[in-house]
Image (tube, rainbow, N blue to C red):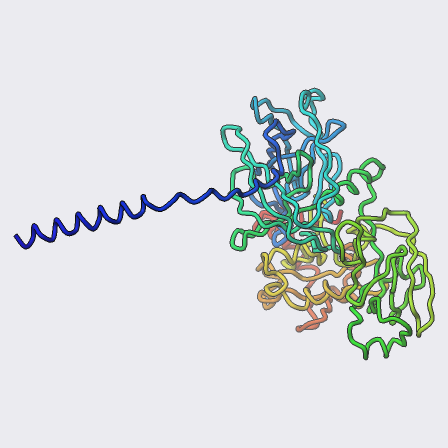
Length: 506
């Protein structure tokens, strides 16, 4: 009886709770305004881009790494061209375009590539391959608060759209780490798909940018924005392609009143303090000096943080006026204070090509140079070599090489040279005792100063008293190899290590 009583009581309480809930009046639905979609449900001009290739191996410069295959989405543009990232087509052997709706394929040719801006144009070999696809126009009016959509394709060819919000527009460094470029930062929860290597971003069916990098943990996406793409496309119409301009000076904010006092600034506190001026660059040619304070660029005032007021984005670092808003060959006026006196300088803008650096920041699909002497492997120092230590190369790579890369303008102000290094030692009879030596900076060989691998190739043709004498900046300071032994073992070294050649000088 007691158990039945509790069953009845429970049933009554449950019925009461139902009646109480039903007796309450229904709440009026809250109307939430639907967000304006960044992409409309209509066919978009996208094609799959399939790339195969082989990167170069800077640790073993005589060979390549295993082949790779990448898939991406390209944005169809006017003039029968498709826009992708430079990273996608770097070291490519073959590029193929694929229609998403039909699977039809065509080979493609890389027309223009800019590793600094991470952009490239490809064109199908079949001139009619893109017929029926309406070229995308650029959305040049994106601002903070706009909704942007990332476009991806499912394996079935269905369009996958992920929307996000533009939270910041700022200057950041792109993968080549040469200067700073305008970047959209977008909050977006994006899923990985097999064509995610290059992802177009659209706003109202117009191309707003391309994926630059994505952090799945913070769900933050950085995008190459449409203004950078527009600059690239305009420059791509010229032959040869000239790239983005640079001024060639480093700076520091002037928030510190003692720094302004030291520089002798008068009047309103503003501008940036010039810390360094690179030789033979536009700033140096225009007469800019260390200690000057740059107060305006192209008639845009610069505040103490180095920002100007952009009519579209608000406060942005003034380097945007040089990279995105100016072109190679143009004259850019800058206002400065020198010891408290106002001056105007005129910068004739130039592009600094990778080969113009002492330590090149990137490689345009060219094999690394090397020379093997006995078992000693010599190379020219470059950032691609340093990046062999991985994403954390600035901490993992030999620190003296990282230092030389970072401060190359100050260390080698004369320019017009390379840094030759002893990268490793292949065990051989002629290198017994030197097996553990590596990462040494070569200063002279046989009494000749070494400023390039070609210099070294010439120097080893003139041994001193039957020996090659190699002087290095680091210990052991001197390495001596017997010429007769090296010559006698050259063929064996080449065969033992599978070297196609003992040198590549061009």
